[in-house]
Amino acid sequence: MRHLVLDTETTGLSATEGHRIIEIGAVEMVNLSVTGRSLHLYINPERDIDVSAQEIHGLSPEFLADKPVFADILTKLIDFIKDDLLVIHNAPFDIGFLNAEFSRCGHPPLSMERVIDTLPLARQKYPGAQASLDALCRRFGVDNSHRDLHGALIDADLLASVFVELKGGRQPDLKLDGGTENELSEVNISGENKNLSGFILRKRSVRPARIFAVSDIETAAHKDLLARMHDPIWLR
Image 1 (tube, rainbow, N blue to C red):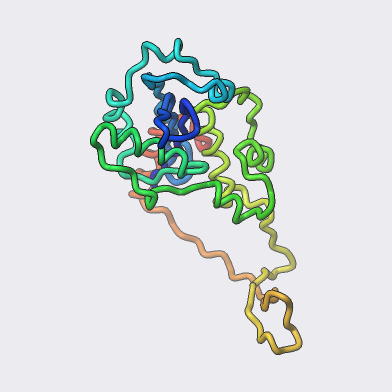
Image 2: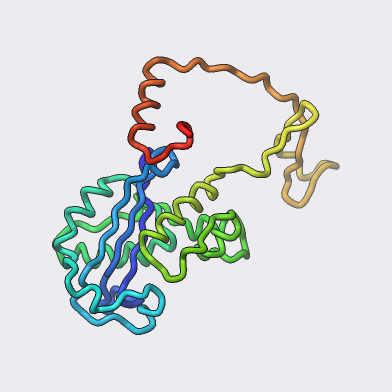
C-alpha cells in the first residue's frame, strides 16, 4: 500500500482569489513506513506574496524568482504521486490550490476520493482537542523542534509520523492481563446491565496464538522492500 504524504505553501489563503502554490513537499510511505523517497519543489508563482503568508513560511518573491513555474513541474509531480492515496492535513486547502494550478495547465483535477484528510481524522479520534499539526506532534511525541517556519517538505515529513500514530501505530493502550481480553458487546437496553451507550465490556478467554510460516516468496519480497528503504529499522 503506497501513500504520498503531501503539503503545500502558497502566496495567500485563497486559490479562488488567484493565489498560487510556491512550494510542494511529498513523502512516500509503503505499508505505513517512510521509504526515504520524497519530492520537494519550489515554484515561481508569477505574482506577489502576501506579507502574512511570508511570515508563516519565510519564502520571498526574490528567492522564488529563478524557480520554475507550475506548468514546468507538473509532469514531475504527477509522475511522483501517480494514482496513489494522498495524505494531507486540511486537505480541501491543498487540493483546492492544486486543482486551480491543474486547471491552468489543462490537466484533470485531483479527486477527493483519493485523499485521506488527517484533520477530521484527528478531530474524530480526539474530540474537542487541538488538531493542528504542532498539537498532534506534541500529543504523539513527534519531534518538531526544527519547525521554526512552515515548510512543505518538513511538514509532510512530520505529518507522516503523525499519520502512523493516528492509524494506531504505537498502540500505547493495548493491554492484555489475567488470561482474558476485553470484548465490547451490545446488551439489551431494557436489561439490568444497560449503560448510557448500550454497550458493556465482557471478559473472554484469549485465543491461543497462531503461527504463520513465512514463505520464500514473502521473504524475498521483504528483502526487496528493505533494499528500497532508507535506513530501515530491521537492518539496525
